[in-house]
Image 1 (tube, one colour):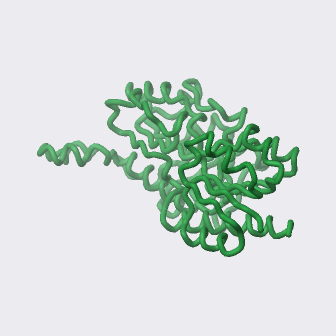
Image 2 (cartoon, rainbow, N blue to C red):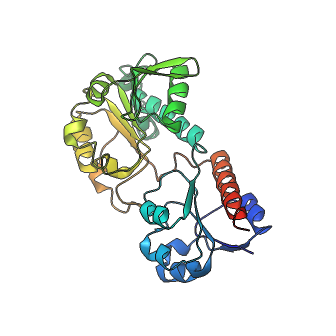
Image 3 (cartoon, rainbow, N blue to C red):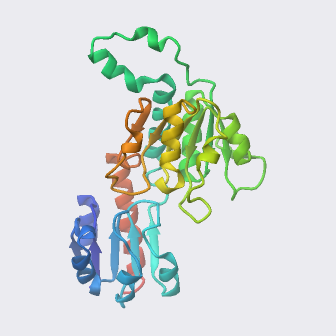
Length: 311
């Protein structure tokens, strides 16, 4: 019987599914105990992780029988993909399984930022009744939403945002042509600089690569429209947080929603202190009850199918 180590949270349904066929070691906090993690994974056929488990060469090199890595999510920067490829270890992310949840987060936060609603509660609770402050706020309808990265999530964002009244444009260096058809929509493809110049809201959906790390530097942020908004649900290291904070504090940019950070778990975000129109969330845009079920189910079945070939 093959053995599977699961190092972070998985749903009970997915756990039961795997436990019926395999010897499952479920240690959802083992990612934080490196010595125990290395010991637990020494003789397993598969390992299932989220984003906090570092599946690096040290972990992989001594696991002679490891055949499969399942990733409960889509980002793969915590997994040494080159090593896995060289040694025939298959890696299965939950591609597309959380796209609906992330897209909802993007569109809803974009509207909240445009309307300036983040400051309404503390002002109203304090008794100020700041109704006049919001008369100058704008509608989301008709605004241009620039989607940087038009993969599974970016396409869901385009569909939901278009239904809400946004005019969507996109930048994706991997897609040729001048436009992309998504269902009944036609999304114009622009160069990055042109997209930033035109968009009232910019949302990021890029993988963390050498080419994207630090892409949204201060220089890139300055290409955005005056008063524009940034939403980042991709990877924190793509955005220079200090540069973003400076431009939010000065009013050069109108607001931001940040679900991902350069270091996670994020322990020090003091550079964002005192900025009103910013939403900071702990990497939860893709984490809902429904998406978690889909992610866990998809990965459990992919791991099962892969291990079945070795029986």
